[in-house]
Length: 88
Image (cartoon, rainbow, N blue to C red; front, side):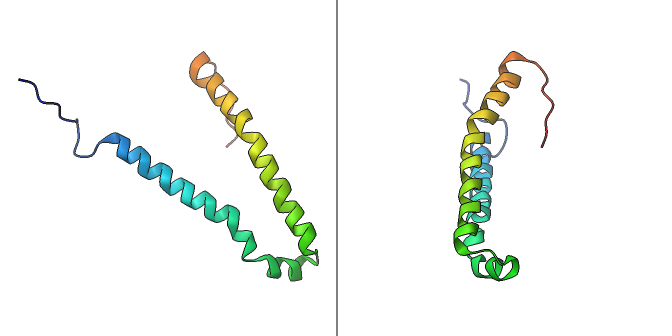
């Protein structure tokens, strides 16, 4: 009888879940951190809260629009086999 054991002490799927959760927590913290420093940024730059909020909103829109583009580029390199230059 064969046993269904994994190759190591920890199932690799849980490692992926843990790393993904950690990355999501870090990115969520960095995306929401400017709200805590809004008054300091306003005093330092002389910009109004509205202008700072507009800059943050534009950043979120660009971040959202870049997701499908970067996903398409990743899919092209992963499934087609071509080498695209990585800019990260």
